[in-house]
Every structure is written in C-alpha cells, then in structure tokens.
Length: 125
Image 1 (cartoon, rainbow, N blue to C red):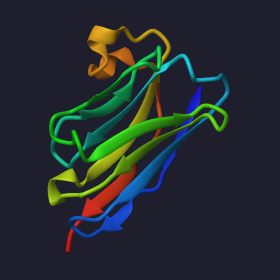
Image 2: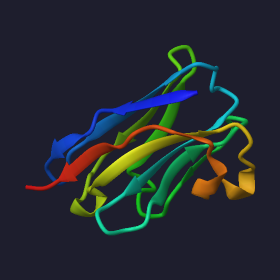
Image 3: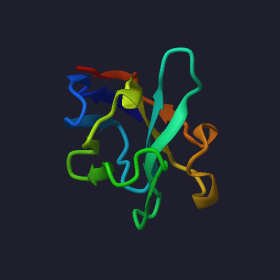
Image 4: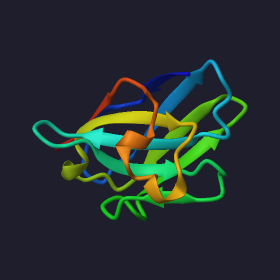
C-alpha cells in the first residue's frame, strides 16, 4: 500500500482545510486508518483514526469536535476535515494505514505499517 497525502497550506486562525490521503495498491477499507501530526522539535502525535471495522472514529482531545476523519472506499481516499483551526494545529500531517491494528492500540503510531509523506499545515494570521 502506498499513501499520498495532500491538501495542506496556510490558513488563518478559525479557518478550515481538508486533507486527503490517497491509497494505491490494496483496498484499505478493512485497515485502521489514521492521521498523525508532527510539529518542529516535537514528537509525532496521534490526531484521528478510523478503526479497522469502520465502526468507530477516535480523536485526540485537542482536536475533538473540530476535526473529522472519513473514508471514501471507492476512491481509496481518507480525508481529514479540519475546522476552527488554531495556531497550535500547525504541523506536518501524515496519514497511516494498519492492516493489523488492534482497537486498544489505535493511537499508537507503532501499530501502523504504511505511512504517507507529510503535508504541511500552517495556521497563522
């Protein structure tokens, strides 16, 4: 599976962006799908995930209520809709896919086998 992330850019505080992560190769509908982010000088952190079953979505507390992860299975594309953006959301955003990720470890980056390159999001006035 190869993942290609896109959609980042510069946005003012309070604005919105939608990130996309297109998969090539195998169908990813039964994979755990996630977004992580990494700001300069900081650890990579979990943002949002869709579980392998597709029955649940999980969010970091910092983005809950503002971000939404979704999957278009036909397009093999995962989206991250980001609303009410804040300067602290500034980071490189990376998508990931895990064919074996278990529910209890969904937030753990080590559970994901496939990673896309980062797409930069800058929130600034």
